[in-house]
Image (cartoon, rainbow, N blue to C red):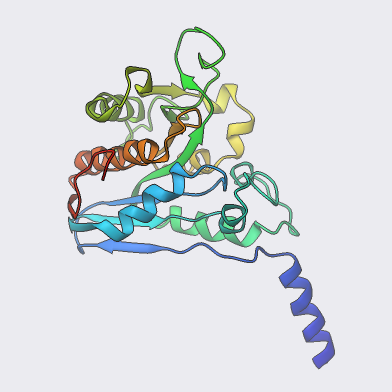
Length: 257
């Protein structure tokens, strides 16, 4: 019996990721809760350096912020998109022997927590999203420098006016842009009707469960990491303002700092 249990545990460990994500709850005990999720892709450093800095240098005064800075921890340590496959394509169906299975199950539970009011899923995306095609970098198929929404709105849900909220944050972000071409736009993937791949994503899982969710995509074509982190942090602050979450930070929000 003992040998059987040891063998079973060994088999389970082979089918699980080596490192699990960390959850940091920064709470005042009142108000709404923003849930920030970074590092779903291990080769997108803007998406995990920003929440790591947030945890260490911000203090929440009113409202609540939950932060997972390192969702796909194994891939993050290897600087790879997904060493067990694309984690952001496992939220509709996932195989029992997938090493990401427990991580996906655990983050789903947190997303569905009644206390969570709005979710940000952080990325670095290719190019610079534009509604009109200009060239290979600036076009409708690009993902970078955009707030991604799965649909126009979630009817009857607080913070459910997805396009309106994303557009407001995009406009506010202009004050920290290092170059005009870094402007943020809003990309609606119209997931239910037009994007089969995105139906497997974290944000669409949230949307299907009536949770407002946005992907924040800085551009992989911005080579300067501090600039990408600056844009991510500014986005957090603008979403917090919309949610009446008050905070303090111990540094000036600029590229040098």
